[in-house]
Length: 421
Image 1 (cartoon, rainbow, N blue to C red):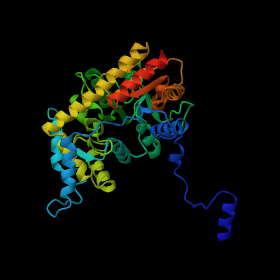
Image 2: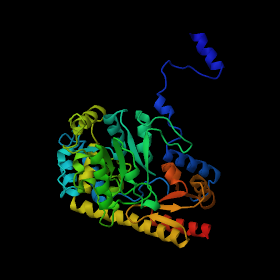
Image 3: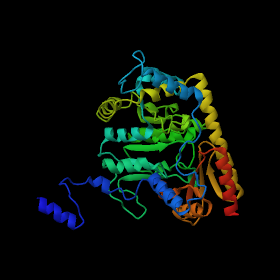
Image 4: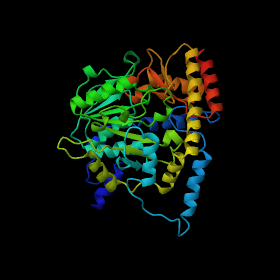
């Protein structure tokens, strides 16, 4: 055995176990989009060490936490050093006070109960936990383009099947094209039935917020087909018009929908990590068993609850002073979005988004999005996000993030203006 191991080392292979690799992981053809963007960023820094890089690619918040929120977490953390203030494990579903505050702040007029809310470490993690609930034997539909986690988690869990073409579309996924031609809402009359429909509004990456009429069509489609909608409302706080901020504003949604949401973009908690998921009591599997019960079982098995400190911050966010502070933060980023929209529009480019979301979606007809990404990075030292990384429907587009301090946004606008003019 030792000799065989030594021979393997000489052959450049190294020791191997007898455990086969998960075949679903082998189906992940590319690296995760934002990891690839980070890799390009590091390569660029190595090539241009003195360049002043501006990052408008990964949607990461940049502005400091409001004092009311940071001080609440600091006080809670300090209290942990005292016998009176120490707390260990909390409820896996989150502290009741926070669940009630979420229900009161976001769902007051649409009858979501605190017992239907699960406080977690973020919507991205909850999407994967929901996949564990659903298992491999369901079919799914995603918007095209859309947040890569929906497709990638489906591949990992075994729902997606093999790739069927060069555009890296999976055989068992229904891709709902969302483009300027259909007002970024899929043609449901030609959409095949799927068990699970992932739907994000405002959409990442296009920035489109679905209208009430559009969401009514989506809920009707799900009810007619016996499907479940997983509705991602992570950017709901950025909606500036009368578009619904929750799927549960739509009549009938409680029987066919789950909602995942987050404090990440609402309050700058991308590093703090805090979110929530709503699973209504009325949502049932085909055998009549409550979906909520299975999600609770997964949460209790796979998760020990969100950080106590983060939950203290979440409570502070939802205080009257905290809500004013987070609203001010949202307005700051939306002003950044306006500046970017004005910049690209003035250059004669086709521009979408930026009105109800912190993302600007810019089209470059006839171009490959990774090529445009690379050229802009090379010539302006600005990181963006290539649209094709969000699906085949994102080809020819770039996503520009409005997350950045104002000085960087203005400098980016100047550089882009000079480059394209």
